[in-house]
Length: 455
Image: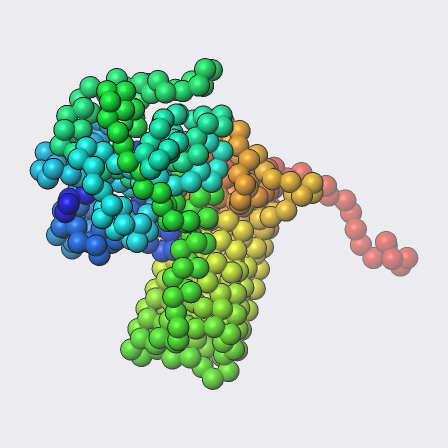
């Protein structure tokens, strides 16, 4: 098996506000697009043909892989669902067995390789991951004696595993043509949309007497990025894995570490990068090219810092946080989370969550990271109320945004792309994209002078 197809045509509406200016699969995790992890793993284990079914803004995917001859991006347009997307890629399925992956799911190279090696089935097999969230959020399955026993959509409690990837035979590709376009494997009262799900074809295959072997991923071997807080979860996990792989300092050409810096871990520096005076680093970090960390900056470890970035003047980067390319984190600015490329946190602010690319955060902007009741914040995802297990109180700022001086963002708030939040605004609820929000101030004017002091 040397051919893989990656499905990447989804609109990414659940991960708002981060799929407005990019395909969902191009959202950066630890400074690398989601889809790049599986592509690199496939190349590493010997796949020669990797075809990506792209939809809106697929040009960004083509641009990213423009120098990789083993990758071809096909524009499948607006499709009826994952089954339809895969059917439109049938012309590339020339081998007897084809590996099919979701573009918004990261599977470890070890699990991918073990799955491919274990595939003895002639028709179908799946990579499954243990359900780590409410099963009502996923199409899931149960496994018995190493095989799929049933498939259920958004079950109340009757699914222990979710899908990560698939083995499709040429024969099973033909069955995609007969996908009903409606997912019917649901519990009574659980509504399903009119959409052609790939898993429905697998369910029909089982009804027709077919068996589907299952490979269960290792812990954290399969990460599905479906909603904004999943970006933070995946980022923390990958940062930890990458930073823990360091066993000593690695300095690129022209890079150096000042003797006054305090290092409690290992550092990997790209070319022409430097760690300057009085920097404190409390764990392992990885830094790109031409970046400067200086003047008392504090990094707690498991940090990924991009290229051409400047961290300075006693800024604080929390454990597991990621800083993108061409960013500035300046005087006493604090980050706990992720900032994408070209983000400025110039001075005196506290950011907990995600900041989209090309965003300027005004001085003294503050994210409320703790509710007065110490509880989780309820989020609205496509009109559905959800309380995430993790990062529910983080703030999610979209791309190409700005905030004014002394802006306050309540826990869990999302700001849509291309928006401006004016000075002294207190934002308690989500802000749609392309919005300008500022407070209306009433000034009271009275006379004043030396007479007030008894003269």
